[in-house]
Amino acid sequence: MTTISPFRRLSVAKVGFAACLTAFAGLILGITVHIGFFGLFALGAFGPGVLREAGFLHDLDDFQLEAVRRAGYRAYLAGGFFLTAVLIVRQWGQLSLGPDLVPASLVLCLLVVIFMMGYGLSFWDVRQAAAFLLVGVGLFWTVFVVLSHWAEPRALLGEGAVVVAPFFIGAFLARRWPKLAGLLLVAVAAFSVYFFHLYKPGPAPRVFTQLFVITLIPLPLAVLGSALLFPRDR
Image (cartoon, rainbow, N blue to C red; front, top):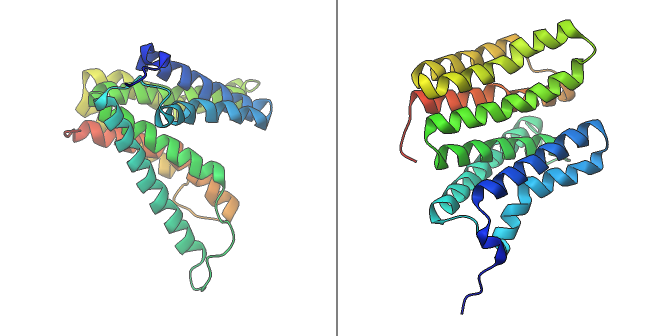
């Protein structure tokens, strides 16, 4: 006889909202207060998945579980290709794997971004997914820009217009004019590579900073823009 967990009554919306809120709070507090708060980020980002795999949480139906697993596989592919590329580039001409070459935070960022986009695009209609994900990334950048320039009004407005606004504008357009939104998102992604000089590699610290920016600005804009331009079956 199968035992039904009391967690089964929880809806995916409630679990998802609580997990996102916990992860977001941990991320912000980890940056601004103490690194220990990143434990909350791990709890929100990975806790529900651990509980599902352990059999304690049964909030997803078969379709939702399939979307989660497809997103996880895509994150695995992205992380694998990224780490292999770093290894090849950094150890070129040497017969050694070398020491650790990339910040763990960068790999974690890439995995989470790819997973969230993969899940959203597998689970929701592409227009709904693009709008939701663009708002989510836009909120992250809003908090980051405000915390970085709260005492500098000009810098706050400038970065808000360049970094934050495209995400919210894209989210607004995605539901109404998806093709136009997709075209603009891809164009903004390409422009951001030029604007932030992401095409000019430098020493390791600069390269890693560039990769963070690429992961959190051009990558989601380009992926979601392409999904809107060329929608396909999940």
